[in-house]
Length: 414
Image (cartoon, rainbow, N blue to C red; front, side, top):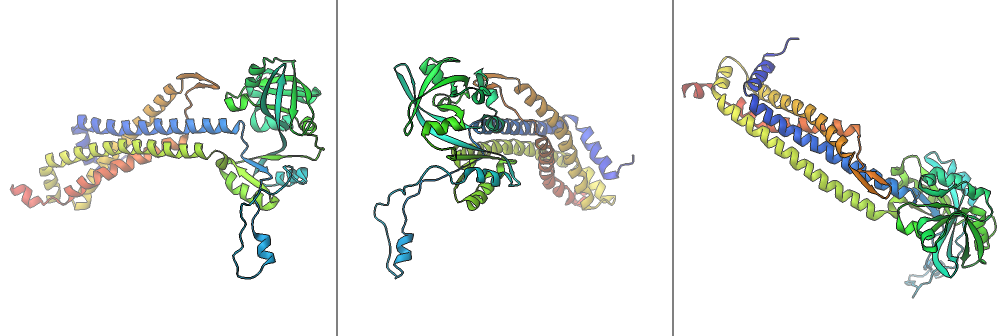
C-alpha cells in the first residue's frame, strides 16, 4: 500500500528517534491504562452498591404519604385579599392503606416502562421469644414476586422461601433477629402488632442480606398473614413496589405514577440521595486523576516534538525550500503525534484490560462481596483510545504549527 510523502517522513522521524518515541508512547499507554482501570473500578463499585441497594429497595415505592393541613379551604371560603394562614398546623387523619390497591397494580403493570409490580403490607411489630422482646417489621408479600424483584433466594441461609405459601403462619426472619432471639428453623415466635392480637408464627426460613439494619428487624410473611396481624381485611395494602426496565428512568416514571394515582411515588434516587451524592463525588475525583494522567502524557509528547523540531530545524527548512507548504509540514508533525497516540493507545488498552482482570481477582470476603467488583465495559475502552488520540494530537498541534512557520531562508543562511 502506497503512503504519502508526508506520512513517510513522519515515520522516518519516529523511527530515527526510537527511545523518545517509546517514552512518549509509554506516557500515553500509562495514562490510558490508568483511565481504563479507574473507570472500571468506579463503574464496578457503583454497580455493586446499586445492586445491593436494590436487594431491599424497589425502583419506585407507591404509598399514602402523611400530609399536613394547609390553608386551601380558607382561601376557598374567604375570597378577599386578606392573608390566610394556619398556626401550628397538624397532620391530617388518614389511613395508611391504599384505595383499590389491586386495581392500581393492574393499571401500573400496563405501563410500558414498568417491569414488575407487587403489593405489600407493612406492619410494625414486636417479636417475642421467651422473655426476650425486640422491635421489628413484617413485610406481607407475594413471595414469588418478591423473589423475582429482589432475588430473596440468594440471601437464604436456612429453609425454603416457598414454604411461606405452604405453612400456615409461616415467617422468614432476618439472621440478626434469629441470633438475638436464639431461634432456629422450625421454632415458634410470637409476633404482636400495634392493632392486632399476639400471633404465634413458625420460622420457615432465615435470610441474611449483610445489611445489619435489615437483618436485625425485618421478616417476611405472606400478605394475608400480615393483614391478619394488623386486624385488616383482604383489601388492605400499604405499599406498591415497582421495578422499571431501566432503573435510571425511575424518577420520570415516578412523576407519571404520582399524577396517575394521586399517591406519593418515591423513586430509588430520592430514597438513596446520600449514595447517589457519593457516586458523583467519586466520579469527579477519579475523572480529575485521569485528566491529570493524560495531561502529563500530553506534555511529554509536546516536549518530544518540540525537541524534534529544534533538532530537525535545518531539515524542515530544506523541505520548505523544496516546495513543502506550511500545512504539509504541520501534517508531518501531527501525524507523528497521531502515531504515538495510536501506538500508546493500543498498548494502553491491552495493559489496562490486564490490570483490571488481575485486580478483579483480589479477594475481599466481606459480607456478600467475594472479590473486588470491576467492570469490563466496552465503551470505556473506546473512550480511552479516543481520549488518548485527542490528547496526543492536541499536544502535537503547537509544535507542528511552530514548524510550519519556519523561514527556510533565515535558517539556511544561518
